[in-house]
Length: 555
Image (cartoon, rainbow, N blue to C red; front, side, top):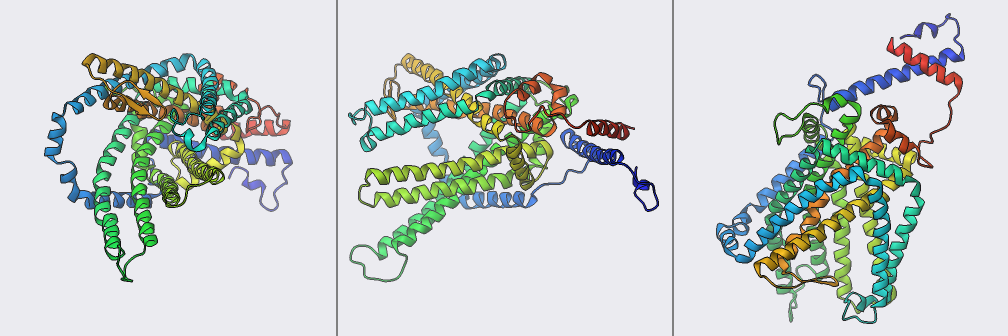
């Protein structure tokens, strides 16, 4: 409306400079409208309408949950009967496991907090240590496998593949070295992102609490899903095979019923649906945690005044985290269900295809080396497809948590991000993710040592064989120590989400992030081949026109 009078017939023509100013005004007005809507979303403004995104996915997930509970209800009393629980509680091995589990969980929780403190201050050193140690360990394992291939009694896996297994592991480590070399210019920006993310997690510890809460919810979902799976296997799979053996057993001449191939395909379909149900429920729990972390970090960037509000009392979440959790459970829940459904379908399909392939191979003659290599390549391709879908969903959930978009809109934004800053996305995967792996391995060693000390203090002896290693502690203690892996992974998963969120904020609104943390933006822009190609000066006319447009909008 501001310049419409100059566009009607009879009005004097405007020059190029005025047209540029008009375009700038329109652009700035649209930016202001989007910013107001975005701020209202992050603030959870009660006056702003917050419609549900992808509501059909919510109803589908709730219907699926109702079916799982209803079908598995007859088995709950058998699986979780009071007698079995009482017998388990009286078993001294169970008591030892619970004691070791408490020690393992306490060590893991403390390790996550200490690791975040160290990462905040020494992120660059940890990153250099990780990039040097992880590929080196993989290469060393590969070389040891090659050297020990002549003795299959020492390494059972090498008995089938010989030196080729060690060669493949060594090549994997060399490929990691090559990947690190290609993104070496992103090492310092990645360290800055990790340091800032660790500081934000320490400032808003409720994000880590939400991650642990989602993990407990996922565990509860498994306990609900397990009786459902038991019922389906007992009344569908076992019934099909019993009928098959009854009709097509030795000496049977009937022509009715299913063939062996048909029964296998039906069982594969049932296996796929069971895995789909399990993966979807666990994925939704993980997605709520990721969207909450993205929303809280986005509020720190765009509406920093919301971060200063304290928690109502000790132990509760700060308002910025509780608001992000509320958005994840309401406005964004449909997008979470949609995205995790796609991931669950692909993951369940990949696992089903692998099981069918393994069953087919087990019924055949022993395979030669070429077919074994082809089999490994097929597994690698399937795993790569599965991982690609998971990564795509992780980045899409960041956009969902930041802007409240639907899953399809977030997916389009992710594609645009890859086009603009693909190397930064690759650096996030190659440089930051191994740090979490290294932290998990360190915590595992610490918990194994503490559980071994507990077993020795209680006078319990035993051994546990894990792949090529024999651990000098009983199996129940080793299992309790191994549970530190998911605990640390869950506790540090918000670290990965935070780094993605900061990178998305830089790609979408670097001027806002610059006001919040100019040093972080300078370190990100210092990397070579940045997707957005900083450093090119704009034409003088466009610069002045944008300044005039901003002034007009402000007026």
